[in-house]
Image 1: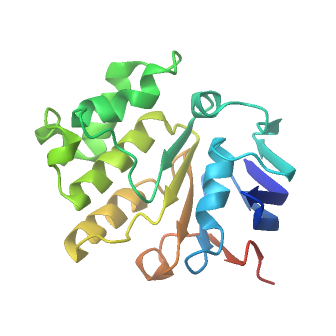
Image 2: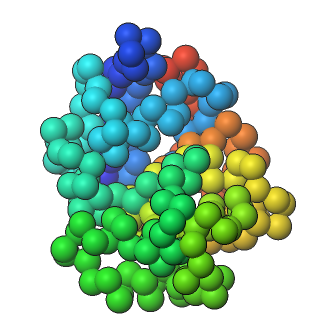
Length: 213
C-alpha cells in the first residue's frame, strides 16, 4: 500500500536519508526502529510532503505522491501524528482534531468526529478546552485523534509513546492495538520498540538514514 524505494533526503546540505526503502502492506502495522537522529522523523515528514526528497520514490496505492502538496496527501487518507504533537495552542481540542478534515472535502466532519470520540472517548470530555491548557500526555491523545480523523488509509505515528506517563502509554497502546485487523495501515517510528513489540507485523531498522541489513 505504501512503497518507499531508495529514498534520499538532505536537510540544509546534511544528508538525512541514504537510499532508505520500506513497504507497508494493506492492513498491517509496521515498525520503523532506530536511535534518535537515525532519520525516522525525516522519513515520515517526507511521506507527508514536509520535506522534498533528492531521489527515490514514494507510492501510495500505486500512485506517485512526491509532487503532491501535504494537504493533498492527507486527502488521500494519510494521518500524521508528529513527535512534538504539532497542535495549535489557541484552538480547542475539537478544532485541532478537525484541522485536516476541513481541507478534505471528501470527509464528512460529523462522521470523522464520531469515530474519534468513539475510539478516544476521553477527548469528548475536553473537546472545548484549548490545547495550550492540556498536559503533554493529553496533547498526545489529541494528536492521535487528529491523525485518526483523516487517516482512513494510513497512519504515521512518530514516537507515540515518548515522554508520556506509563498509564497513558498503556492507553495509547490499547488504541493503536484496536486498529489491528482494520483497513487502516500503521507505520510507527520509535527508538524503543518495547511498547509496541506485540503490535507490529513487520519491523524495519534504520541507522544513519539507511536500512540496517
